[in-house]
Length: 253
Image 1 (cartoon, rainbow, N blue to C red):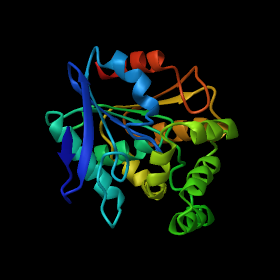
Image 2 (image 1 turned 60 degrees about the vertical axis):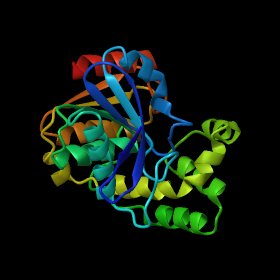
Image 3 (image 1 turned 90 degrees about the vertical axis):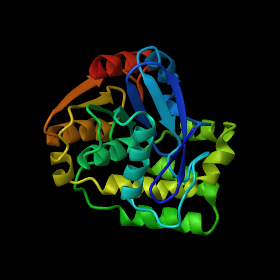
Image 4 (image 1 turned 90 degrees about the horizontal axis):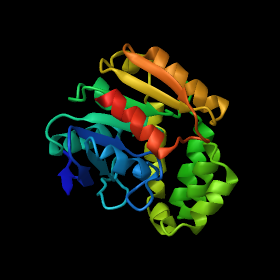
């Protein structure tokens, strides 16, 4: 399936299941060939019509020369429209920022759930990190850019080594420039923006994650007008698929 964003960018969408519409927003470095959320989809599809999509510049979706976080909100709006006009939204990692911007913009999303938003609100930009990431991409060192980004956001070395061996590695290299999109959309999070999110929001974090991610989840939840925060058993930056599906199912239904 395909949605089309207002700027003409095609957005590749996959649908499964039956029930109320649920749209899942990927983290950085994810697309249909490497989707960390995929394991939860079968269980969720027993209760919802689940929509996953390749964010712009990733996988089978198109891109545009100029990026702005607002374009990702428009992309998500197009997916929600394709899903029937309104939908629950779940975001993971940088996908949390897209979901929050969409809710703040007034998209028809009656409830939102987030897993480990990877940002502290209103913190200063890491200018050096962004500049080095951009330099690697502009020099065509896409594999190095993928490694640099992942290592910079705390991904353990053993996970990066596994990525290198994954069949989706060429796809990751092809979309290395989109890590700059993730930097931009997470940097756009402000107290005022979060304060304007009216939709009830569940903010989750794993008890196996580092202090930064656990603290970020608590901080984001504290700034949302209608939020519930829960720390659940899990690994670094992730929780068991079946457990996640159960939590999301209860929250959205």
